[in-house]
Length: 233
Image (cartoon, rainbow, N blue to C red; front, side, top):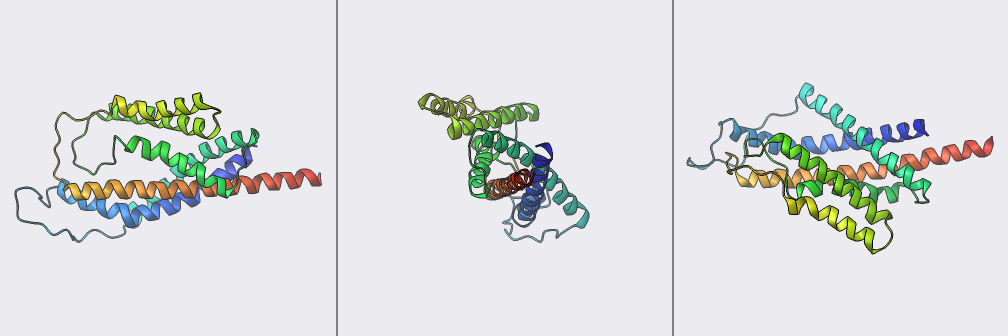
């Protein structure tokens, strides 16, 4: 069981992480580098002459970007281990697991890890005002845990009480509210901040959807191989 879980998670996480890293390099990193020009003072948005929205940005850097790709693959392999473990638990309770159903698992993971916390604590560009990092991390972790539990209740809960509990878990962190800074400041144009948040969430959704598909596919294939070996024995 453990070797099957690890094999499925490593294949799924590496594949999804590689695609996620490439999407980030193409769509997210240029926005981030553009924002850093304002953070460093190389560009000034307020109280200065109009600045072109098109800037010459650094290209691919083998060391920095290569390490980013490797670490993204490792992170998504960790996500895959959690996802495949939950898939194995669900399969033991009679739920079908394959690439198609894995898509729903991946979207649920996106809701828990990205959309739910991002609804109140949106992805931020460098240089913006922010509350204490520790307080934000605690709120983020609690929101992810609550949203993950809500996704499980929606998928496997029975009856109105389970669905009401899921709704409470989804709403509670946002009704309580995330830590906010005392004042809002920042040198980066709001258009760049909005584009960064949109692209970060979009890439996150694509990556989690692929992670779910790959996890379901590889888990189903490993399970089928084990079943075939059992029949031969």
